[in-house]
Length: 320
Image (cartoon, rainbow, N blue to C red; front, top):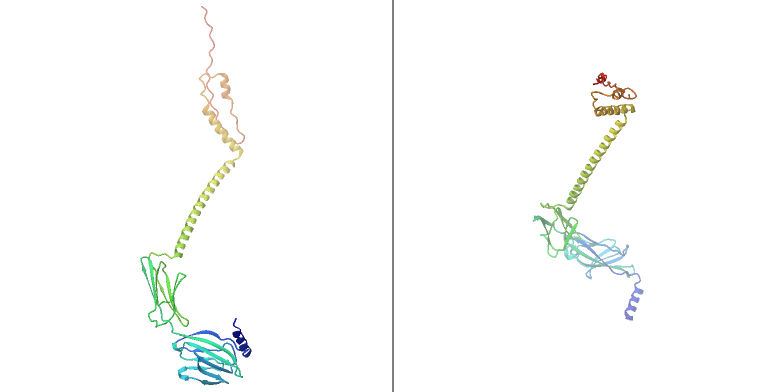
């Protein structure tokens, strides 16, 4: 280890206990704008000296300003709190600025470094988009860019972002819709938009909507058919139940009467014709009255009595 270097650092810390380390920061300003370089490490300033690239510009001490260069060439001024102001900046003002703040006894209190970067405002971008074979050809470019001008170009479409540091960007895509081209740097930003709709292209969300609508329509038709069939089945069941109820709702006497009437008609149809000469037993069967049902019933007319021929007595045979 280098003990001499360590010893030197310790001695410096003992001699300057209140000195803060030099902090470096960057400030971006547009051309023809005003730059304000303030002091960050202290609030009250008794004495401060500003320099550019180790060349002293001015000093403020007890609120008195002392210039080390022509103020008109410098275009600079210092405020009461030690802030350095530069008016109508140009690109040549881009440099490293250093401020040293001192105590009243002349000891160094703080030192800060500020890098001033002067940029030109970005030009307005131009975007071209046209449909070629169901695809979209997109071109974003900047034609008025100055030499050594730095900026970032972005093209945003369908939640996709393409970036480039060049003055022109070209690509093709199957997306059609709104394209946004943005050119920006640290001091300015400009955007151009264009809407493109190519024939034969369907947006993703449109396809999803069509598919969802078709599914809902088919589901509705199926549900409608099911309801119609169910309603028809219930109606048939209700009709059958009503018919059975109507049949079962007849009184017992009327049902008995109808049954007997049918049985009587069937018996009449099945009865054989009476013989020409019925026997006395058949005559008695035919003359027997039919059973009468209980309750009111239409009287059935009796069958006519068959005519009986008188029986001739047997004549005695003559004896030979």
